[in-house]
Image 1 (cartoon, rainbow, N blue to C red):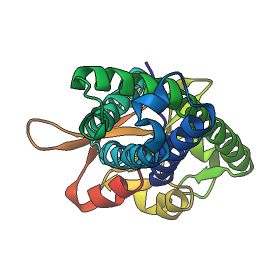
Image 2 (tube, one colour):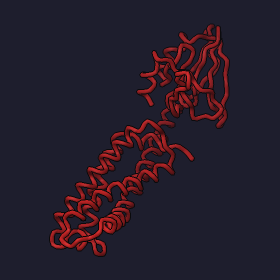
Image 3 (cartoon, rainbow, N blue to C red):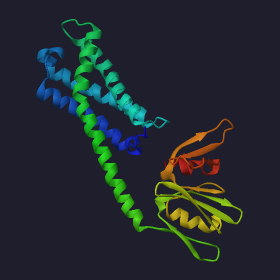
Length: 265
């Protein structure tokens, strides 16, 4: 299954989750008051307890979303759904604990937890779906704009005699390697990985690469950060960049260039 889009890992979407989940929970419960929720949350003190529970939802979302934001690993959509359910369970634990402590009529904690989870799941399912669809829609429009912009930009590669040899869209270039008096340009065409051998040097391509978003990760490699899935260290301590094309090689990343590349992912 495909990896969750990078936009889901940015800080602003996490902040939106923190705010939207708690506000939606408060508004939905206050307006619609699902069956038995008023009695469950203290009867005449319903408004007070609902406000406190909404604050708990917010704090739980802060903890879980910041944890997700700083996760060192990338996850697929199945794991993301599992994470969202785990957020609801985590929130229900503390909401149930609060209700269990303040209720005038005693209630077993497990029953309080079950009811808290039911109300939270049925209520928060709506904003989770809306936020996910909104982020995907935003990503779609952003990607379409980027592709339109890239279509207007071209990387023009000249050999050492200043003869134009190949013209590529920056987004299609995965990486460039140096080999003696030649450079190998790896790019995608119709979904397939292609290679073009150009008589030139990394130094001659430095400005062209920098102007089009490629970064140096090794003395013999330039890589396009947009195609890097993950930076991984092997048993010998050597860091490699894994690309989103299964046919592409793993690109070595030296300590000198690691921080610069990592900041762009």
